[in-house]
Image 1 (spheres, rainbow, N blue to C red):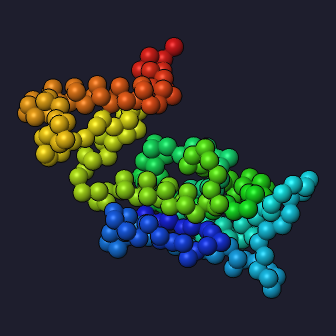
Image 2: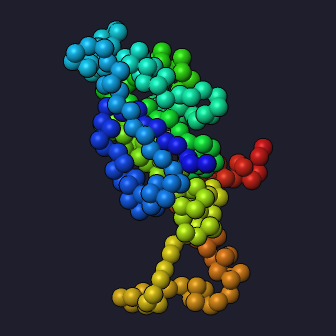
Image 3: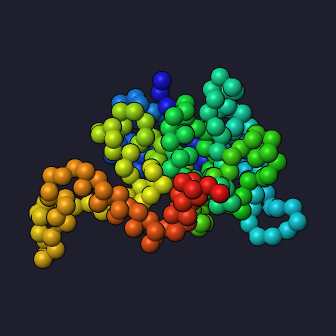
Length: 236
């Protein structure tokens, strides 16, 4: 079954963008996933095609109106038989993780609502049961780039997208660790040699070295991941 992505946005012309290239682009051309964009302005009811309004309580910026977002979502939500999760891309959302990408990849696809302005009227988020998702602790001009990141992370995990079936198994975050360093030819470059263990042909020793390197870089760069892994291995 083709994995289906539907993106609700004020800028449908931004897609497929990077998703039209490399792994995702080839997979889409090969029918492994499909992309549909929906222009939120198509659901405006005035001649100016306005989709936002000033926030109640005052403050800067504008808010995407509930009835606009709801009508757009209703147009693409096929109900329980579809089973696709509905996600809202927003900085206030839950952090998107590799585990989330794997979960999405295992499903039928996703419906993504791209936030703009100051945000989306909370009532439609609650009424439609949208899951609010963030790709990092920073603010973008809108959810479109975040949607592309999320889709790429999920699509590449679909069967047949990556060349080597085990490529994803040793990547960063797959086992709760960052990935070990990589080397290729030549064996010496500017006086720097590849670690001898990688040239030894001893697969057990190579695996042990890679594991140790992954643990070391995770401890140094992502103490939060290291602490989480320690809690999982040694629960209180």
